[in-house]
Length: 306
Image (tube, rainbow, N blue to C red; front, side, top):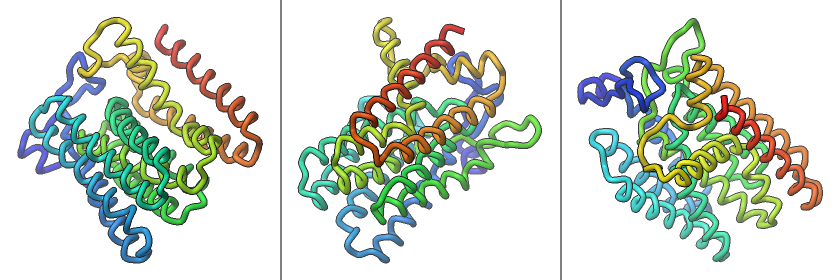
């Protein structure tokens, strides 16, 4: 926080912001440091995991580094996208190295690229991106049977939880003391893609792919539907805005905490649902997941209309 104030890394309030006081940014670098330490420790303890952990550690560093630079001075969104794509290629390569499955490698690439940008889009109010990462990571740690995926998910949950007291004050009417910044939001998305990719390698059934999307469904729906609506209206969809459902909800009720905790509760319920249905047939998994996403889409439309 001292460094952010010294370098004037401060998000000012404005019509494209959901906060009302000037707040330092870039605090997500602490999460990145903790995650890289965890990956190094895991690579030391489980040598056979190094083929996956080393490329993805480089990918995580790239995503965080371009975000850190962007926190200091605005970069072209296309330059950031190129760096994100390189990091996604590294995850894809790691998946192919441990599995030899070209399809899983392609899915991992798309997953990483999507989650990096979804977490960046959805990091707009106090605590929402970090708390969502905590809940989704815990769900993956519970769902996966892969040891490395479980430890990566738990490391992410603990790292993001350590940041939350600075980003989501729970007492009184306090405001966030520091924001994630691009260095943290993109890194959270990439860090979530790592255990998801390992889950896909361990159990490549279509049911696994469907189940993985249920816990983060609130973020997936809000980001995808809002982005689609902006594209259809011919807007500059890559520029900052306050059109997400969670941002409109905050404007209406004036409470970041309520919205953040509600999104987290949806993610937790999604994790429980995925756990309950994971041993059933693929037809039931698809039917229940379709109903879950449909309910989320209806909730998104109601929030947008109001």
